[in-house]
Every structure is written in C-alpha cells, then in structure tokens.
Length: 428
Length: 204
Image (cartoon, rainbow over all chains, first blue to last red; front, side, top):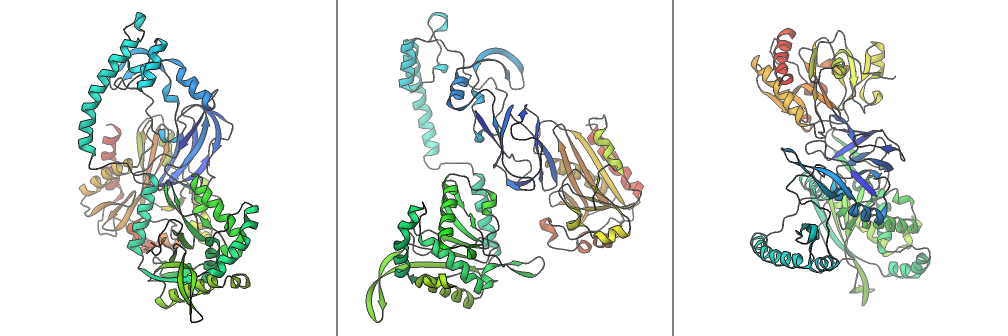
C-alpha cells in the first residue's frame, strides 16, 4: 500500500521550501521517525522525520528544488501490503491497540481494526493516538442476515450493539439501530439544515490560496490596461483542417491554440516590452531574450499555468504536442513546479468553454496576457463584399507601467496578421 | 573557496548534555558565516575576503550571510522540542525576550520585523535563524552592538532574498547598530541583561 507524504507546513504562513538534502534513497527501508529530508524555508532549516514505516518507493523533487506546502514529498510503500488486497487485509486485520483517552492515560484495551493504516496524501497530520471519544471499530460477531441488512440500510455494523449470544449482532439489533438512527438523524439533519441552508463552508486549498495571492499581487502591483480585437482566421482553419488528420495519426491534436502560441512567440521578438518585467528594487527593466509562453489551464484543482519553453524555436507540431502533454498533466494533477517556471508571457484560451472577450489578469510580474475567445462564424466584409468569416476574438491585458498603448496595439496587430495569414508564420 | 563547517564557540551548546541551554558569545575576530543553502560566490566579495584572510563558515541553519566581529554578539539558544514541525513561533518567543531586555536598558522603538529580525525603527540590529532537529531547535542570532555597518557592504553582496521591510535598501541603509542609534551601552551591560532574561526561558 502506498502512502504519499506531503510537504507539511513548517512555518507560519510560509508556502514553500527548498530541498537541501535527501537523507534517504529510493528502495530504502525506514522506520517512523527516521529522517527523510533536510528542508529550508526562510530562516529555518529542518530535518523532516518519516510519519510511517515502510520502504521508500519515490522521492519527489531534486536537491535545490523549491516545492510548495502540500506537494508530494515522498512515497512510502507500507510493507507487506499492496493495492486493494492491502485495504482488505487492513480492514480485516485485528490489531490489539491500547486506546488512550486524551489527557487521561491508558484506560483500556480493545480489539480494533487497523483503519488508520489506510491513508492517502490528504491524511497528512492524522493523529496516530486514538482518543476514546472517537468511534472505534471492534471485532464484530454477527449473523449473515444481520450483516446483509446492515449493508442494505447503509449502517456501519461496528456501531451496533449486539444482543445475541456472546454479543452477536442479530437481525433485531439492526432493525432497532435503524429506527434510532432515523429518529436522531431527522433531528440532526433539521438542525444542520437550518445552519447550512444559507452557506456552504469549505477550507481553502493550497492552490486556491496561491491563486488568490498571485491575483491580488497582480492587481496591486501592475497597471492593467486592455485592448480587444477580432481576427478572421478562415485560412488558418483551412490549414488546420488539412493537416488535422496527419497530426491525429501521430496522436497530436492540432488546435488553434498551437498557432496562437507560435504567433505570439514570434511577435514578442518584435516588441520586447511585452516580454519583459520591471525590477522596481534596482530601477531596471529586464528584457528577456527567451520566449516561454505560459498556457492557463483550467483543471479540477483550479487554474494552473504550465509553460512552453522557447516557443519561438518550436514548430507548430511541437507546440501542439507540448500543449497536449501539459494539458494532460494538468488534468491528471501531474504538473510539476518545473513545468510552471520561467514563463515570460501568458495565453489564456477560454474560447473552448464559451466566452468571447475578457479582461485577463496579468500573470505578474510578466508584462502581458492574451485571452483567446470562442471562434464563431460571422458576417465580414471582404473585398467590399459581405461574406461569412471565421472570427477569433482576442483580448490582451498589459502592464501599462511597462507597455504603452501604441506598442500593445502594434503587437496585437502583428499577432493578428500571423493568424490571418498563417503561412507568414512559416516564413518568419 | 570552500566554507568551513560551523564550529564556532556558540555551537558547543548544540551538542551539550543540557536539554535547554544558551550562550552569548563575543567573537574574538571577524568571521563571515553563510546560510545553509548560500554559496560564497553569490554572497561574498571573494577577493576582498581572501585579501584580508577572513575565515568563512557555513552554518547549519537558514537565512542569508552575516558578519561576526568583536563588536557584535552572537546569541544562541537550544531548546528541547519534540515532534514539533512548525518552529517559527520560537523566533517570536526568543526575540520578544531579547527586545524586553534591550528595552530595560533604555533602547526605544524596538520591533520584530520580517520573519526573524529585530529592528530599531525600520533599521535592522539583529538577524536570526533556526536549525531544527527532531528533538531540539537551535536558534542563533547576531546582534550589532557597535560594528561599523559599512563593513557589511565591503564584504557582502546584496542578498538574494530580503524581507519586505528592507525595500531594496543597501546594507548601509538597512542595518544599524545599538551605538549608532545613540545608545552608548557596553557589551557587558547588554550581555548581562539578555543573559538574565534567557536564563528565565531556559529554566522555565
């Protein structure tokens, strides 16, 4: 059975730490309390002990790498158990444990199932010491009928007091428990409903905290200014359709976004202010000569921005492949910090969901972000004639401290030219 | 240039048999001490340090590079702490004791700033860091009693990380000393007062 140990919060409000030194190796057998890793947060170096015994099956992160609180740190294979067999074994296991009452020492010995051995990464901080007021799973003797009834009624048979021989749980015990449960649950539910009908409270996840912090940092530190426009992309669509199948044969999905990334990367080379950041500490402008395009990805956990590095040097196929790879990583929760580092400009493509225009929030301290809206057929004027065109709405936000209105408009025009005449992307 | 492992006198208490202990030490000469993950090239003007043959040590705790000199005091505290991962509150606890001691000597406008600094106004007089083992924490701090702050700029580069309240200020603008703030206290008075206060913590 695998147990993921996440990087715990070792500082007040600190969100990340640097791996200084791994003190264990993959495959190494460890005991509870053995030292796993030396981590450094601001001003504190701490050696993190193992919360469980077992064998190290994976180390997440290299020495010198910075990771966030809540990120996976190590994976421990709890010995002798694996997969579903492990869960079943553990559930059926009978372990003699001394049950301690909080602050009152040992008060008794009960036969309990080792349910605290089944845990996921989210069980971080699980209190190993059972307190006497928590439900305890006892070894239960019951009739097959009672067990089946309990299952049908959704009753945890461990909670039912047996009145049969030797405390065996009988059919009648389940029926009585069911009646009591119904009465008490009606009372509890009605009280709970009154409290909860107006609001639902959920604790903030680490990723939501990070998103909130970054968004506020952007709004507080950058002078947001936005420009909107539309570009006709029938030619791009024709090319995309022409090569779509060839790409699919290679398991690559050719999307409009791949062309947008390429167009942006090349345009950034012409307008360096859009690929820069302001260093207010030293009163410098930092113009970056590498073009790493962040792609805002809508994942179940929240917004993430993995980065396509050196996008200016990649072909459309490579960009499409990279987008696919990063999107997949986002969906499956496998995006790493390295995937999200060093972006110089960001693209947010919400068109597949539906919006046309937006005012995107800059991924601070970058200088700009481009929003790509839903592509639709629209009436257009072409050669003084009314025609049907395929139109892509674009919204760009820039930090007006860095980028002037003229530059952002010229930059957007350049991107639009590339998208309108995609062959020019190949010529550049 | 390779830094030496930290074995300056205050580190004795780390391995002493006392569960809780403290030591205040006045360095016999100038030393440079870099943080656990600092490297010399990024932190120190190497040529200058080589020229003046200043020894460089790497401490086990975090934070940025500091200078120790006979005009500074190194305050170290070891506390027996078990099963406690979050140890940042010890900065607050120990720094509060030091602030109280300095206040009793008449120093005003003392604050805790950043993660673990003590300042007079918005200028730093003490920086601290912690090294945590599973069974103990080792806090150590450098208090600038009367050292000329221009020495810092002479040997140390601008740090990679800085607290918010530093706001990009150079070493000279950011750091001060107790004497420079017009409190003409001698080493003995300061050490005596802080020792008394820390004794209470250790014996608590």
